[in-house]
Image (cartoon, rainbow, N blue to C red; front, side, top):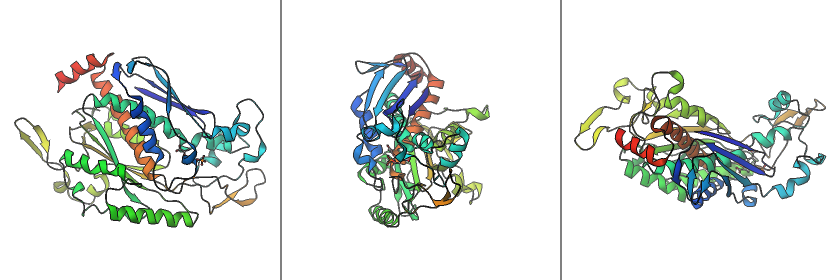
Length: 387
Ligand code: EPS
């Protein structure tokens, strides 16, 4: 399975290509657009999301609601392009007034401009922008519908924004390993504007975002992704680049703004003795092997162990600040304040949806590697045999 994206943030639109899905997978357009809407929500987003209403237009690879096994390609149009034509037209000379010459610390601006030899930083930021994650969301949503055929599902919620944290100990969520309870709880995240499952924490997160916004500042945070129903044995211990935790980390780290990835209780486990962090093994007729804890986050030895996969990602605060930081003008080399572009105050809730979609795409890829075939029916047979 391979996913490619293209498109500039204020260009005509975004393009996605997914190669490697089998034929005959039933797909619903509405479910893809629903995930696109979920990504657009979230308290702390800026004005842009009021302009866009992301929807995919499929160009190939799907016919009559089923995949063909051929590359799936699609477009998501940028509504904002109407306001940007004269600055972004591919062949006309672009107007000068949207040129960017004062690189924002923390963005791709300065290094991108040097690396690609541009005299306008807009050429960098248009592509480095997290607008690109709309495509990865649509692609992931398609993979998600494929994996749903095998009872694999993905959820997420936000566990911190700025210094406001969901209290792990006060919440049964963190103690339970009953995936039904877990799913019920995390599903509630969709009802929260900050994707937080605790109301008190939610209110404090909203307040923190309001304060940051009033200060011209921005906030990062941490979100958690849970994937249920993953069969034993995706990924492998036999070679370093086949490990499932490594693949998930690679993909999650590629999401704009993500600076840390944790598998299960990865960091907390470092503070405890081994006797307290490894998940003891049980066996019961009918249920088979299982664990009563899941500190490992569903991955041991680079392989899924059949428990829920739990991933945590840390996102840095967005570097575009209304109260800008010091920088240097790339033309004059004079000290100036960084460019102020319209931006979001906090995009952690949106990133949490992107995290779901990126993680499920990796699971899709590994699922195909293990059970791969050309049609859904062929894969279904192999999966059932193996289970
Ligand atoms: C982004 C800046 C903002 C965000 C954008 C990512 O866009 P604009 O500069 O047009 O106001 O809203 O996110 C999206 C457009 C999106 O779809 O997520 C950036 O610079 O990364």
